[in-house]
Image 1 (cartoon, rainbow, N blue to C red):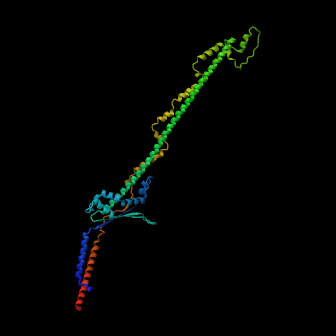
Image 2 (image 1 turned 90 degrees about the vertical axis):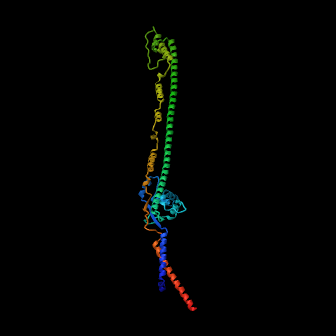
Image 3 (image 1 turned 60 degrees about the vertical axis):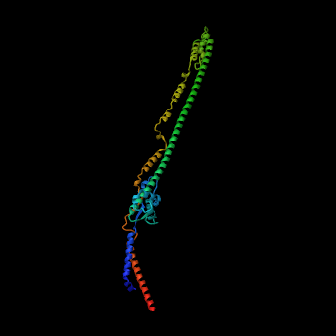
Length: 410
């Protein structure tokens, strides 16, 4: 067999060379395909500390990586990236389809997002492995790196929007609490003013009633005194008492001309009014009849008038009504205002400095294509051509031998 192959070496070499050249020509004509990779890992805890310490939004590193992975697989994110970066896909457009369709086909079919969960009991953490296969002439590394940055930025903006919504809702709740405290303060202030004014009105009414009753009492007392004086005047006139005297003096006037008599007078007993004499009694009665007011005879009346004058103006009510900055008097709102100030600082958090994931390995331009394997194809072409040539030589010699045998037998 080796002799036969040696004899047909020219054909074998010819076919081997021909198939090898054909394979080489194929590798030159076919579009080469390249592949780039990128790896994402969770960030350290301190990278998200500013966000997690806010007490409003909690985002562990593993959850942040998961959210970025979901964004990388999202159709909306991919479409948005294509529309925003069409310059990167200038060499991707295929005949008969639009630029967006060509880019979408590239991203959908050639981009693989592989998520690896952390191993139990191991030290490895979760990671996301990205692979992008692309034809020659396309900046695959730049596309993949830009897409990763775009997805991270999209997710960062989503988290920022979520945080802002939470803060806005919380601020609205706190604002409602302050409004409720303000309304409660207004109600309590008006109630306090009403109570004070009502108490003043009640006191004024009571003092007015006391004043009227006291004046009636004084008038009744004066009229009683006038009646007593009239009665005493009548008695004094009947006894002929014109000047003030005493019972012993009256007795002496009746026993004038009799011998000396000794009288005993008890001074601790009240002397009847008529002993004052008609002149004095008439004078007092005349004054009492001419009196227009009895107020000066009772000290309580002056006190009542003083108290009523003081009740004309309630200074506490005036102070309550003149308050300008009533916010400082709201009760229980200091913690609410402190929370509002804290949320304001959280809302001003610089999200551009927050790192959601760690890019463990960026995509780099590959050293060579993954398809086709030129050397392997040329080698396979030479081997296949050589094998084909050897097979043809063997078949040809076998057919020649059969022909000789058939002729020899004939």
